[in-house]
Length: 112
Length: 116
Image 1 (cartoon, one colour):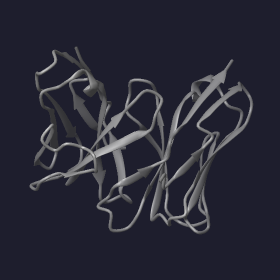
Image 2 (cartoon, chains in turn purple, green):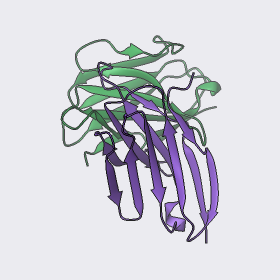
Image 3 (cartoon, chains in turn blue, orange):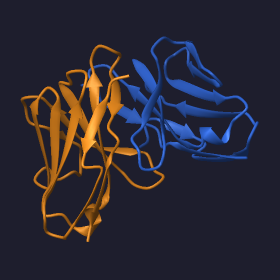
């Protein structure tokens, strides 16, 4: 059973297009992180959201945490080839010793 | 963000040998570190949680006698793959938890293990 459903798992778009990645769960998370990973490297933390309804922006990336803290989305505006990579959402729950529950990942390819 | 280093970045070994991978938090103390395994184009699979000064907690299906974890200090955890076999070939990534910042985990650059 996947506790954090991430979709889509693969996405290939043209430069300039917009896209949204979703992470959904039936569980409540105390915080949720988004990471970006390039081949052969470790994931790099993009943002952490902790408050229900919270919206954070990082240049062309907009992150939202659902009101009930069970879901989150990542929206990229005017995607560029440099955005290509594996995007991972990961949620933390209370009393879990800091363990993160990862989504399946979204492999994004932005073609010039 | 916090920096986590991992060494070596890649290793090739013969079947039957043991390989040690180090994970260090460079600018913060990490009472908890995590070890993951990742297959190509897939998400991270948690192997074990490493707590400083105590035994590691392994996820279901992970052999503790094969994947030995030692967390001897607040900045260093090691993973030893014992008697490695080709099926152990994978990308191993560690992370360190910063308790001060909402359980954020900071990841090392990963170690590519190839067992011949």
